[in-house]
Amino acid sequence: MIDRISSRLRAAPETSRRQAGGEPLPKGRQLDADARQTLARGGAFIADHPLAALSVAVAVGMTLGWWVKRK
View 1 (cartoon, helix red, strand yellow):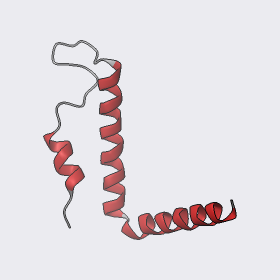
View 2 (tube, one colour):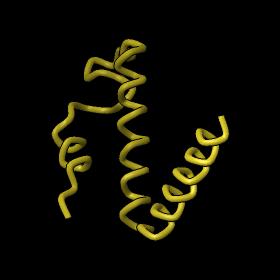
View 3 (cartoon, rainbow, N blue to C red):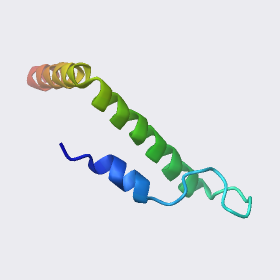
View 4 (cartoon, one colour):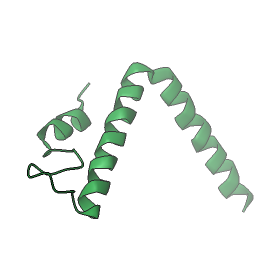
């Protein structure tokens, strides 16, 4: 299986909240860094627990399908 998220995260620039000079990152960059860390945790969870991730995806899909059908 190809893990595209991890390879992109490794190739990404520094994801810390501070630049090399010690200055805080701009708000947009800080949000980007937080999103990258969240994606990394999510990808690790899916890799560690594929059955649970698949079950959640099926349940969400069925719920959305049922909800859309009712409207």
